[in-house]
Image (cartoon, rainbow, N blue to C red):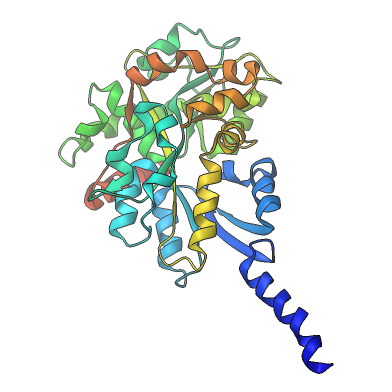
Length: 350
């Protein structure tokens, strides 16, 4: 009796060990758009797991969290696409099997192999992109003024401007306003951005994070957000169709976020399944319309899973022109990055 009773228990134990449907947890270091239950719950239900999410803003903050964590503590990382190499060099990302990723279905401009690959190996995949530019309330601001960044510091809109609190895109916009391409920002010419940055701050009412910037524009606390874009206004458009965004004549910045598996993950296979889910058409459609902020899905097949209204809010059909007019984020080395953060801190304290 004792021997026959142990057989089903042993079989059950083996099944539990082999199946992903038994209590497993995945720990992901993400941006706020990944915290929407509508995005996460379908994956949890399919694999019978719990996805634990920790939100962060800014690559420096994310890498610091990883540096201070125990090996194996994190499984998945969402990061600025331009910073993937930095994370790889720090030993934070594991190689991905490129053949398992549907990049052939991506918008060609956002595959970004030059960012997501290092030494011929793939470490991350682009999941979402959009634009840091100018958002505004078109009933309170002359839309024609928003075609020229000089209008922001002309005095006309003093005290009615909000600034998105992320130094890379806003310094990139300031550089474009001075005729400097984002790829050409150096330690030598960074100083030329200080005066226009301080002038922008003087004309502004506040510097705020994603949610606070959205709230300020929606409530009329500010009429313009520098560094905004579709990510800020699309999620609000249903309730406030007066909110709009544009890329001025000087250009805008294209942001792109990537996702990868953290080196040393104790569940690399499950982590890879999560990455594959996020870049699938269904995952992409949910990520694109996340309750925190919207953005364009990297996978063009996600369009089939979006409604006509959602595609219109994202300006799906205008993407070819937008992609031509936008530049990537600055990619500073450590010394330049520190100098840029120091300038930003000085601006915040002004």
